[in-house]
Length: 159
Image 1 (cartoon, one colour):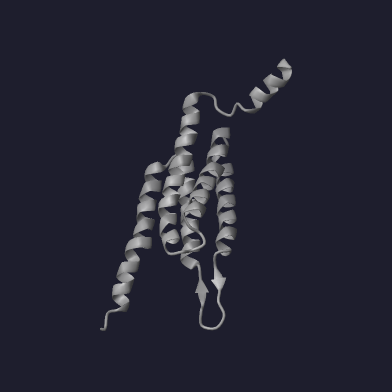
Image 2 (cartoon, rainbow, N blue to C red):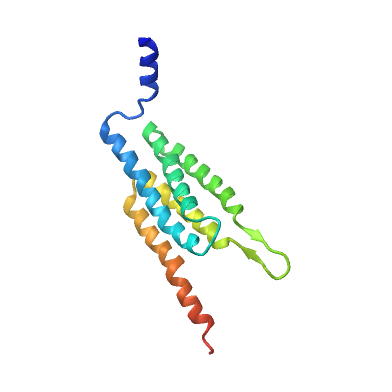
């Protein structure tokens, strides 16, 4: 019985100490928060990829980066991990883009770009670059919330 307990304990020993556990929790919660901020706009507009999707994308990207980082992989190996995340997110984004018939055109490009950018923010969080992630979230928020206001002004301009 002791052998079984030891095997189970060693299988669930990812963290060297409690501080490492706290770092994982903080990074994943922070990624969820930042992703949720960006997903809020898509949710508000009734798009399929809303808060939950953006939160999961951001947390997933952070986790895909953080786990190999914890394992101590080299920079060149991390580059391949990041490439894999980008490829996977590209596939997810392609599913949000719909080509309409007649005069509907293409829809979902902004949602796809938002998911792609949210994944990039998740990568930044996973790498421990929280300040960069916050700055990028603020810039994306400006693009999603503020730019449409000016776009509407320009479209209504009679000159």
